[in-house]
Length: 342
Ligand code: PHE
Image (cartoon, rainbow, N blue to C red; front, side, top):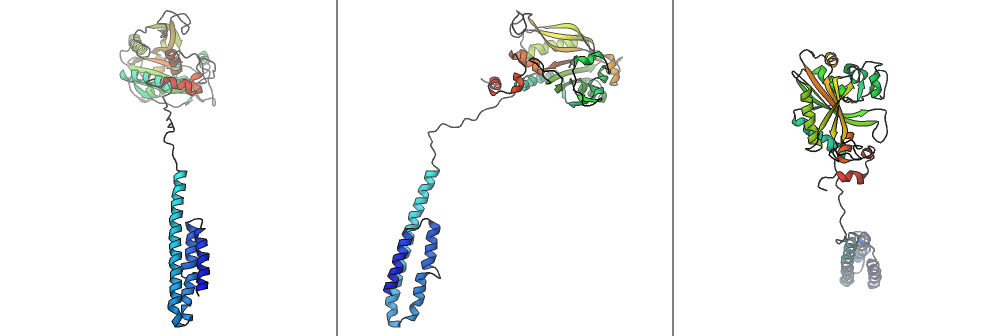
């Protein structure tokens, strides 16, 4: 019996000390000490040996059992310590490494300028209105006094979807929708993307407009001039002056084009204003009586004015941006220059 136990014990101790991990160790525990384990089998076999030999044999087996348990415990502690060490190595953090910078975004310059424009006009009581970008020919042109085959259609190179449906060429159709559905007084801004078949340094096939419309009793060109003067001072600077030149739009009569003194040179003449001291910024006029009639408003009772401007154009003038395409390429070095608090 002693020999058998010694062989078993020796084998067990070697295997335990060579166990690679806690799973392997547990297998060994089962192999020797489990209910069907090898040492357990020897204990069970005690009943087959003569009774006088049993105490001695039992003692030998129990000592072996204690030795194996001790070895298992020792090995388990060792493995645990190793695993902990490995985890510490794997999760090592170098606290002296520089942190990862969180890149801060910024509003796009077009949104910055749009928000400024909207702030100025909402402070005058204008309400911001949306309309569809895919529009009926009727609202984009006919309601605004531009019949089919009218030469003024050439002013707005149009993307047609079919004979009656197109990508809006300006945000004025939103104004027609509002006039049709509301009663005066009306004081709204229409805004959003517009589309024209045009593409160069100062034109893009998609650009953004904001247009204003006021319909009420006793509205004159002076009201228009007063509001646009305020706007020019608000969006450029306090010293900005405006100049109204006679122009033509089918939907306004009279129509004007509005220039402002150059925000870069203050009117002296420079690269931005091509030496003239003035920069054209928007179109405007008194709403044509035909447009009022088309939209169900009595021109004997009500009148109004409208104006329209391109946000890209205002942004380019305000920041001296030479090429409109910079506004659409979204190059981060360009955009980050508009970050507040720079
Ligand atoms: N809708 C015109 C355009 O896009 C701008 C405009 C609006 C002119 C209102 C006069 C009055 O060209």
